[in-house]
Amino acid sequence: MESPSSTRILIIDDEKEFTDLLQMQMRRCANVQLRVVNHSEHAIAAAQQFKPAVILLDIVMPGLDGGELLHKFEADKALKSIPIIVVSALTTHAETAGGLTASGHALVAKPVKTEQLISRIEDLLGHTIRH
Image (cartoon, rainbow, N blue to C red; front, side, top):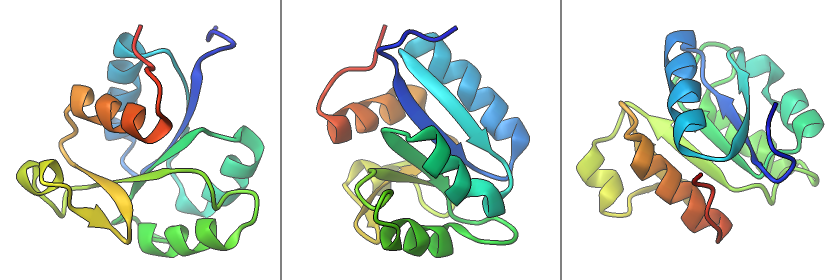
């Protein structure tokens, strides 16, 4: 069971192996409550129900891709203020370390370096989530 003060993070990525590994790594390093959506068609409803503090969003997915989801999140009054971190294999760690963004959203390269991701989340939220 997660701590009531844990940070809610929604992970939207079609690669189940990736999301399973990311969940395991994040739970070891941070005080988080995670929800995973592996089918992009369910992402908006999951975000509305879960009310995350931050969303981790893959770009390349079947069905609705990350770009389409970004537009849907930005158009939804209840969701548009949630910070989104784009997680993508289409960029390099050097580019993301240099501050590269995706449509104005923070960007993290795959394969994800857990410490870098947690730091990016903490920067966006303005508080620590580490144990």
